[in-house]
Amino acid sequence: MELTLLTPVIAAAGYSLIYLLMGGGLGGAILIFIAAKMLGK
Image (cartoon, rainbow, N blue to C red; front, side, top):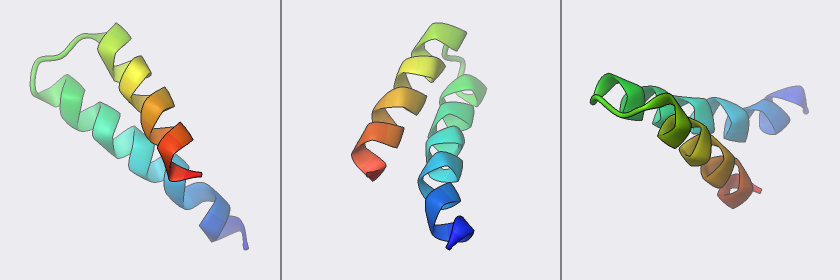
């Protein structure tokens, strides 16, 4: 049960991390994290 609740958060963090590694800024990474988390639900 807990794994299904954490999966969207982990996926959203992954997208944000990829954005940061590709040279993006912290503000954009936070926006991507929030958007991906909202789309995951």
